[in-house]
Length: 424
Image: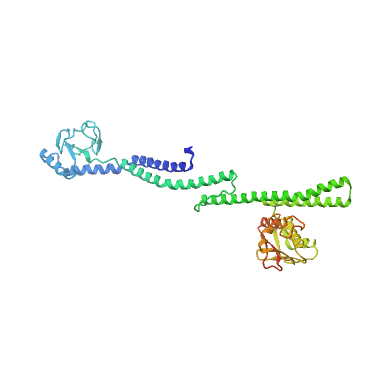
């Protein structure tokens, strides 16, 4: 399970990349370390050494003194042989003569001379052999230094990268916990938004989606509970009417029964429409609608309803907008007093459909509650209807990118305004 943890996968990927860099850098250095530049430097050094020593024709004492003078400041042990590999002079313990298979000119590294470490050997143009044993002065191979440096850099980056990687994946783990809580039924689950990167935007989206889910579930629960309550009354009347018709047919009772069935059908239709709009089932909003003409058609269905306004168009669903205007007019006629004034006001980028009546108005404390499903204001319990009209108007307005509100500065104290985006 540990290998599957995201923060370990990211962290080990970083470490693996750094190790790969060390290996590749070491391989490149090893391939090109013994290039022509180093060989040329060694050849020049050998030539300068030969020039600085007494010639091969000088006495052995002169050659020995010249050798001592040459290396005195460098704390090295060197040995010089003649062309036949016979000892001429040495500083310190003489090194055994070069092997018969030793190369000629240029510096060459020899390994495995008994009692000595690796030594460097070169042959002068006059045939003499010059052998250097650096002993304790020998440094590590440059490749080891490069690898050590890269390894230290990798270690530093690895240590500093861990907290950043852990912080990133820690936020993802907390987001996962929130998703699991939501899946377990905790609709109040939210996660803290940390930072401003993609993970923060993901957390913001999760919180927004969770809030929407919680709102929809609560709305559906409330709708179901209220619908169950509201359906009982018409169903009870239908049941009673059917029983009475069985015992004694009566035209009035039959008409009342038909009215109850129509009322029940209307209620179910409104509940289904609210449910569809509430679950974000996107309605078709591709019609070009003349709002003033649509308002005129609905105003003609009512007495004491005056229409005024501007010719303007919106893009949307004519059936839903017709339903919204009709609900506003129904609400004004049921809960207000005549006359009812319907106005279409065209603004620069928005259209306002304004419905006002001469009633006593809506109390300020109830101006948001009237848009809730099945809400009825005090004193309006016996008014015909179920309290779904304005709730549907709000849903239809929001589906079209608009809004609805109780106006504070309308023509009367009972003015409702439906605002929609105007077609450019």
